[in-house]
Amino acid sequence: MPKFFRRYQYYFLLAALVLIAFACVFAFFYYVPARASLLYGPPAKDLSIPNRIEYSTRLLSYGDELTTPLDVNGAEQPFRVESGESVASIADRLEGLGFISNGQAFFDYAVYTGIDLTIQSGDFTLSPAQSIIDIARSLQNFSPSDATLVILPGWRMEEIAASLPTSGLTIAPETFLAAANTPPQVLSFAAPATMEGFFFPDTYTLPRETTLDQLLDIIGRNFAAKLTQDLQNGFAAQNLSIYQAVTLASIVEREAVRKEESATIASVYLNRIALGMKLDADPTVQYALGYQFDTGSWWKSPLALTDLEVISAYNTYQNMGLPPTPISNPGLEALMAVAYPQTTSFYYFRAACDGSGSHVFAATFEEQIANGCP
Image (tube, rainbow, N blue to C red; front, side, top):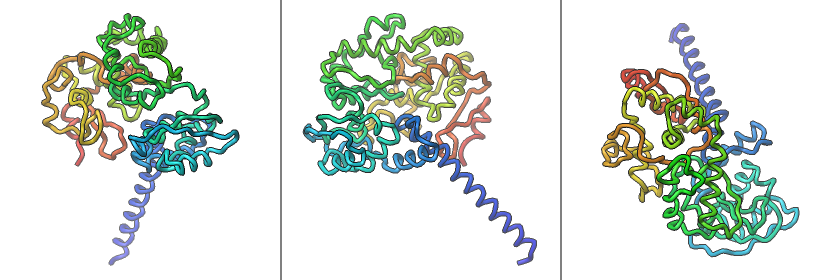
């Protein structure tokens, strides 16, 4: 082979290695921590960047193990945390006593979230029917007589209801769902038809004897407290009522895998509304389809083309404007994105082809087509 071709073959190989190295650096320094934060919440503030990457990678490697109970029919049993006992020791005993399937996974989650610094000594009642995450949260620095209800951004009411049995509260999921369709007086300013969208994502530490009415009132008051005048002014500037803004934010919450894109995604939907276009939002179709028994999820992904034809008032591929109610419970970032969206000329977006969870945006349909994956 001539030296000329050997030289260019060498440059091509070098360029390929640089691209591969860049992709690996991107995955470890950006995508992996972002994905872990989306699934498991933000990392502990005192974790260094290398530790954040390390523990994010470990958590993602466990797949569903962190959220899947060891035995859904397992009975409650006593568990004692000794004074000064290390998290490693607690993790080993939890696995050895049959509460969890993987002590290392418990340890990694505890360190990642900072729960390792808030576990207290004392007597607890735990069950193999709780997931590793549920058990870790149950051992945080509050009284064992307290209950903890965690509402994650983007959950719908049914997902919140499903978490009640492991929260420590004695509220039946079906009773919760029935009552959630009669919002408390504290939310009367928004005139919601349902509390869907107004269950502000947060960790609620409550007495175990908290009643259903008290729970709904506490959650409603938390949302009302977060609804600052600054947010309300932003909604008004977009010509949206509070209820309309929360409904749009619930869609943005489900679309924005990477939270820094929230304001751009909000701009796309607001641009479509201003032009009289349909929203064509996949999450509204997922909401309309409901629970998927084959995957055990409320959010079907990916959607089939036939799914876009589902007959429902929530299907924004078939109906103009916003859906009748919010489709999930948005966090503060999604609400802020709707109140203060980016100013863009975008009317379209689609998932990037690199699997990063990011999106590519387009001003015209032709650009949208051109952004399709090969």
